[in-house]
Image 1: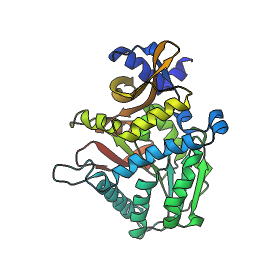
Image 2: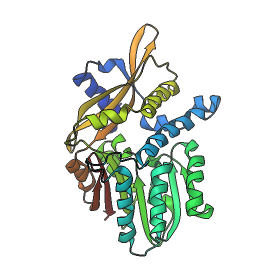
Image 3: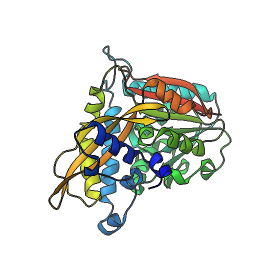
Image 4: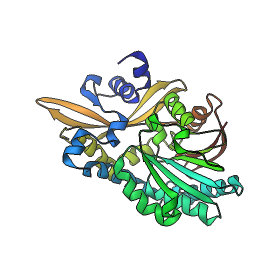
Length: 329
């Protein structure tokens, strides 16, 4: 791996940080690329697609919990839950587009938050002309069609199975109106800030609105982050990623918060590692790593090169999740 590849490889950087700041040794930890967790492999072709369906299902289950309306991430008075924050975000977008037709592009689709947002947009009178989902996981399309075709209409639903690193805004064709691009589910934290900025610049055009969701490092401390990665779907996700790597898990995943250095300064990163045994050696697989920006670093990540300007921010009541709406310059 050359210097540039190392600088862009979040998994390897997090592995090295775990070796410095936790009881684990870096040479005990194996990594898998973020793309390989979600894309079809030779093993999938041999054994069928159920493991990728499971991977999508675990992430969808987390999002279903988030919008269940039972006060998740609300403040002490029960205000600004994730559900309510998404409604507020959709209401603001409805106002912002000011009657223009809207094309909705979702990077890394999931059914529950998206259905909530789109239903709200349409209910507010937004002229939603099309929905385009972009995912590397081919097993997500069926669930997304089931959730969204009844809402947007079969003719307005389309789907691309691609790695977002390989596409650009022209890949989606031309739209004479406003394009809203979304990246939900804390996906932005799965890449280093400079790499994610390159990706988002390629996938958007001047005048597009970009909505991104981020779990934050906040005054609430680390407990909300630990609690999130302790949820059963996250544990199941780690088990499945280990199995997809043709390894046998030897226990539940462990959760760490470890710092890495970025061009924005130090950023805390959540990491899950699952133990496995290789012959007589005890090893670990890094199954997930995700940057946890502060509010200010999340803003800096988007504004670093003046390609985007922040239009509006919404925060959950407990201040642990941000919804950032930006305009592509």
